[in-house]
Image (cartoon, rainbow, N blue to C red):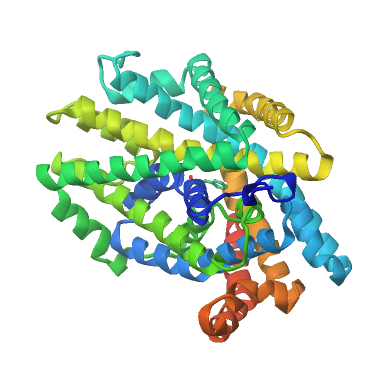
Length: 445
Ligand code: PHE
């Protein structure tokens, strides 16, 4: 049996394959659509600094926690949690079932609306190729005609779900790993080409200043909490995506290095996407704080005015679709892995059956913007942070020291100092910060 087929449940054949798949999960609409617009709304540099601090204090510790739980548990998120915490009795059972239910719920809910937004990006690819027409009266009208048209949104949602199901049904190694090995380098190449483009056409200077010159007068409590919530979403944390991918790893050896690579790629790609988008925005004298419509309304407006705009537009929206695709794959995989590991379903049946349910659940979001926002808020503000809190508590307090520190033990020199730092953070710092996000989401302060 090849390494890639460990235990008959499949696995990543190479460590690089794992890093690209996990980075593929992390890098998505969160980086290219959401990060730029919230940074624009919260005024730039200072928000970026806070966001980076959140990645360090919450994102990194949880990313390691999820990967090591998957790696040591060796199964889907529910069974991995159960395998590592059962010895602790009731707390272990509560954490296991809490995380398991939240993971399945988040997998269904997030993918259902994510596929609708990703579908819009597919529509813009079609427009850039001349296969669909844009509204003569401008980008705002084009976007409204799409987002306000349930049938059209549902059609692109269906196309996107088809792409996701296709890869997940193909398996971990020949579906997910193979797709991400192509998608991630393609994404980076397109992004670098766009960066080179704005480097030549201008706007990069103002964009750099906007992102990296902090103006602390713009910092509010609200900005801190937004940054913390986004750290979850962008790193795919709190719903077992990284647990599931971690379970397909072959050894403990590279977990620490791999999670650093994933967080680094995710952060760098968000920053570069922001640089590119704001360079275009500033060079055309537009406003950075346009909100969620930034990439679907402001950018197409600007693309229409710049030389070679149709081609740049095509590159940009292909980038968005590719990023969303590899994230959508991981969202479906969390639930499919559970069907395969726990219930013994075949991968194909699980991928198609669960994919169809997610597709049906996405229809209300395709027909109603309010429903889409509701799903987004429910998952990002409440479900992911709650799942993350349970995972942090389980990793910090319930796992055996051996399981908990396995990734560090594999480091040269034993990694004792790093392990101690991580353990302290995941026990005390991460849970408190996450609790703050949840309480804020509930409107407690
Ligand atoms: N991280 C993805 C993004 O930034 C979204 C995601 C969240 C994917 C949770 C999987 C799990 O777009």
